[in-house]
Amino acid sequence: MNLTPINLLGLDRAALEDFFVSTGEQPFRAVQVLKWLHQSGVDDLEAMTNLSKPLRARLRDAVEIRAPRVLSDHVAADGTRKWLFEVDEAASGPSLARGPRLDPIAGGNAIETVFIPVGEFVAAGREAADDEDEDQAVRYRGTLCISSQVGCTLGCTFCSTGYQGFNRNLTTAEIVGQVWLAARLLGRGERRITNVVLMGMGEPLLNYDNVLPALRVMLDDNAYGLSRRRVTLSTAGLVPLIDRLREDCPVSLAVSLHAARDELRDQIVPLNRKFPIATLLDACRRYVERQPHRRVIFEYIMLDGVNDTPEDARDLIALLRDIPAKVNLIPYNPFPQGSYRRSPPEAIDRFQSILSAAGLTAITRRTRGDDIDAACGQLAGRVTDRTRRAPGTARVQP
Image (cartoon, rainbow, N blue to C red; front, side):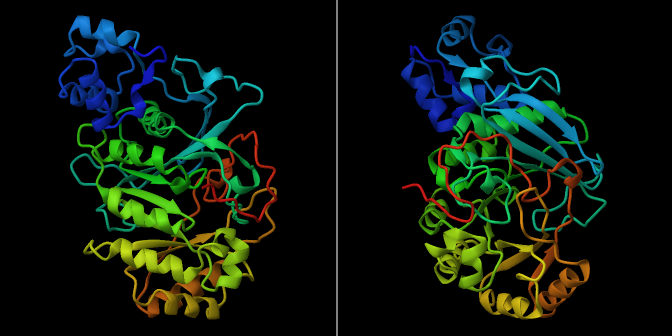
């Protein structure tokens, strides 16, 4: 047995099967444990009653079930809920938070995770379909926005996380642990998780080796059983890894575009200097070419006087004319270090109308949770920066 316990939350089915085979057990034990962990929310091996007592005894010294610890829990007026989760291993320890709030520990790293309920849950009805918009108000969608890194190296100038610096990648257990812990804290009532988006802190594709098994856990029918359309990975545009994701686990893809011209996107998303728009869009075409009825989601933050003119809209139309696309227009959400202003409502409406008239699906995302700094671009967490990188510059890890 390993001297360092293995965190079961960090293992997908294949890794669990390998683990049990290495201990002399049958591979089917993996499915049993996945169901206990993710469908029943169990955190105690003794509760896994279809495992024999001798097996549970052997596992006690070999494994653990450890999620991030809850530091704070806030609910916005619109029902959006934001947690601050501590992810420093030395501070969190093996036990789980049982209540909604613990006293924060001075210093250290913490990430933010957000749950966004939309619509009303109707037990006799159905959830919003995979390709329906959130404004289908009588239907329900519960979206969990999770983080993949402690901070971020990319330095996008509209994003609060980019101003916090970067400390480290999250482990698979810390990524899955956000889903696992949020599901426990939400309970089994009307506010349940139907969608997961990797749009929180960090660039998911720069943590590929930990994100990939986490995605597989979310999709596994013995765990969360989400469809690929209901799991979305958002990227600033790491082209080689977009291609790799297409082969390994083609979940829904969202691209932080935010500009239709390279000279402007260079300023907003510094990674564009390495992977310019034409190169990025070629990768997007490849991503959906073998997936009928799939679209790439292009995120476009609306910045007053920067990227919100009719000319910008027409440039965007020309750019996306041959790509199955949906455009999410996102009103800019201010944060203390930010220098932009939100586009006026009339400018956003005009921009959307131009896109729609050209046949593009364009939705203006409602601002949710801004009263608790949980809106898009506002997540910051608590990051002990190791990069000392100036805002507006990107560092891409090898």
